[in-house]
Image (cartoon, rainbow over all chains, first blue to last red; front, side, top):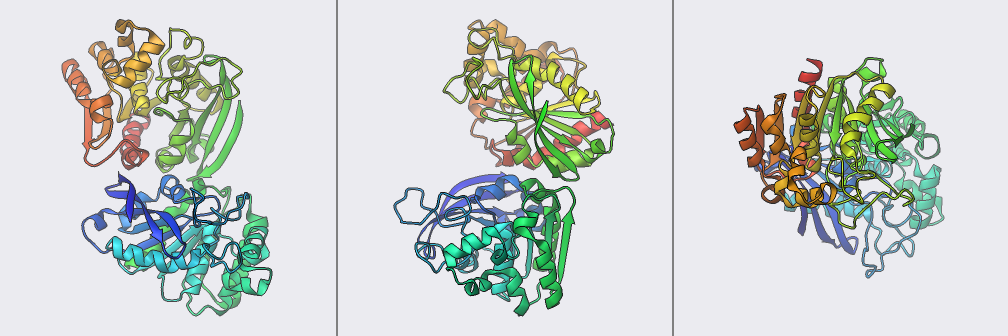
Length: 281
Length: 281
């Protein structure tokens, strides 16, 4: 593991690390914010952040304004990249010219179909390898929260729902709540998981909510002027699924807000408070 | 004037505008944050932000986390680009392959030398055309503060010192305080202002402080681990100049901090408080 960036930030340290991922079969970068409490030796809880389409580990750490919240609440924040990578094109990591498939668009699933299955195992990476690495390398506690934006909101919901007991808190910004029913999800799932839509249900929050074994309260913010609201995000499907399952949901439609990090930054303090209450409460 | 971006942000709106600048002879973009108070019709004071080498109007508005402070204090924040631009290469705006000369490196001076003199009039743009445009177009008040980072910290100090009475408050992050004495400044001033170092004194904060007609208190934050500290920034020259002139200075050396926007974001709340006290007090 190699530290490739470090910056003092709000009394803590924003770092970027690179490591050889056994799960993904390539080098991966991750943003790690260490709050002042962690630098002082405390075993702090960890909030995992999953980013959206086209993002790397950089977008959240440079644009969301997360560090003051993490510093105040004493949370380590880990922001991985969104897919396996192959910058030198020497590892055979599959890719596609489209922004919404391949590198930068891993959708946090374990792919089963060629040419993706060899490297695209982002679910195992995020839910297994990454927490083990973080808890071993940064003196982090085992209290975990998970949050994300857009494709990463889908990732946060699905990862928490698939691993009852592993996360104490979950929230999302403008998540893709029903990938099986929208163009981004149908394209990605068709490629990564195959044509049989039955297999997609294990990776679809609205489907997983039906039989969830744990009822972690969901906090979801959604911009009412989000350009992807009606076509890709469809929060009404999440509301119906939660109502049908008796799953606690706070869905906040935010008038005037779009899909950008300006939206994320505007409501991030509330998400940190939500996670901190569960992780440190 | 044309609005090219707009995003709801912390109850206000982060916008980007493009306009034909008469001073610079090209189209220019600027970031404009309108706080909730401005959207409600109040004539809010304006804080001008001047960015550093290689920046456009985007860096500050995406990376500094300024919007919550601006919203809280009811300040409009205007972040112009750092030089004239000529993306289509049709206007004859001079440029240079180096990152520290030409486009992205205007140094907030009025150039006198060919090939720069025709377009590189950033001082007149920032101090004259821009405030007139902002006060006319956004219902802004005439209370002005000015702040900046690195080359933009130099710009903020020099612009305030050259225009007594025009700004009520000034501050800077890691400013180039004595461009005449450091490599970045000597290269840029030699090109823009000519070989005679006598002409540089009008554009050098340490020189201008000697005979300043106004004693606006300076707030300056400087990272103690800034990679440009000893070679380019030299805050001790600012301290000596202020002591010699009896000019009020709060210079804060911040242990561990570098030259990045992580540093700027960490101390920006204090700068907003400094400006708000003068602009709204």
